[in-house]
Image (tube, rainbow, N blue to C red):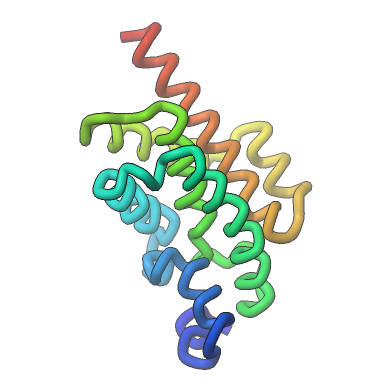
Length: 160
């Protein structure tokens, strides 16, 4: 079942799960849904800075484990490309670590996050393949967020 079919078919909490898992619909675009959803998440973090507070990041992460697992079952596919809550969570973790204050910093961190999320260097790829369920959907993006934050911070503070 496609996510759009799921949004039309399901009601109540299942519909809400699919809506959240697809990043309020930002993951429904046919091309590069992870990137589009990450841009949306970046804009939301810029507008609502509290989304990158420790309590928000932890809450989004914990909720995401449940949301992503349930959405995967509803859609009949583990980590369907339209499930982008994990991108939101991973990117907001990146922002929570580095605490960007300018549009350039938000954009730079977004690029670093997408680079690690797409290329999946070790240990991201390993975690993506070894961990299952909602946690498995989420963990590779958290690792990408941590690695993006560390790499960006190192570049800014030591290389430039």
